[in-house]
Image (tube, rainbow, N blue to C red; front, side, top):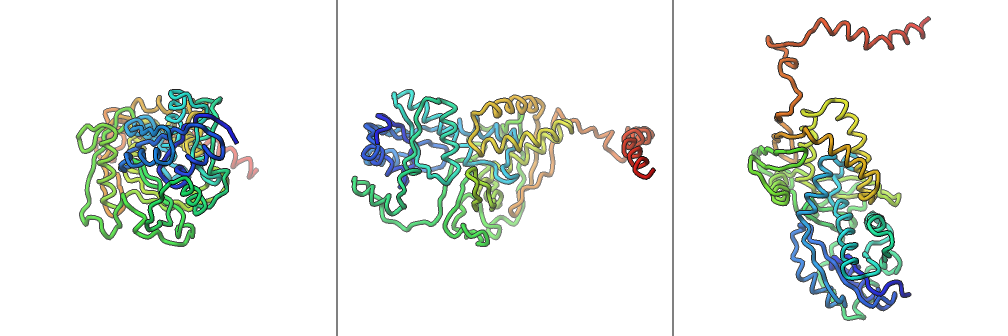
Length: 400
């Protein structure tokens, strides 16, 4: 079933992507498979993964460290848009997919490949995100998805790989499917498929159980410039360091756990567990700073934009025309979003306790109820009359 001569495969080192290498070659007639593993700050040593790909039959094994790009060009725009899919999930995993797709397309151009491939099944969201992103970046490039078509169980896939000398070390099998990057972890499958089953502590890694968190609160101050996080507790940090340090601080206090029933792109519901300490705190802080620096109509209108933006990312439409148009709107709103937000972290909660900005449109002498009050109370009566006039007229017509 020859579909391409040279293929760039998104490679994780797991069973499916490892089996993809001989499967592409022996079942689909691919002559050369080049693997690409993306370092997204997941904290794993990728050298063994690189070597494993070569043992599985890849002619070349690429590892790209794109952690800074991931945070700066993907996470930070999402924070500016306060993205929360289904009003809960900050898209930590979904944000990585358009970047990996771009790496695949760029590698295909560099190495003269006529196709790219991934190990996604036909049931998840990632197949949509990869396929649509690749289509947007290079509509002429073929996209191969062996695991979506081969129909093998996990055990059958392992047996198939062993026929070609692929070694799958015997170890305690985890029932969970886990994806990890600098922004967080997603955990699904196994016992978690029962929506009434409480996640065991063993599934968590970035966040402490409430019982194990400090008994004293910790305060953090996050500085923003034009909507972008730039400092933590007064120290100006590069994007990766800022997220890393905030992950550790917030996770220590049990902040960042999400347990939700999620609406997948393919139309089914799934139970998902997420750990996203820094990302949730940054979105919460950023949204609060907007309330201090933007007018009411802008913040209220932006809520609908944020919902659409979140859906676009989740549904694999990062490179779509609508996403680009919304980027322009969001960028304009961020011009004044500069300042500092103070949060109190304690027992799983991140509570905003202060904020300040040179661009603040909070006016103390108008807001105060004290002696310094400059608000013209007499003006309220006329305002209320005009404001309520349509309601008065309607009420009179109904009762007449």
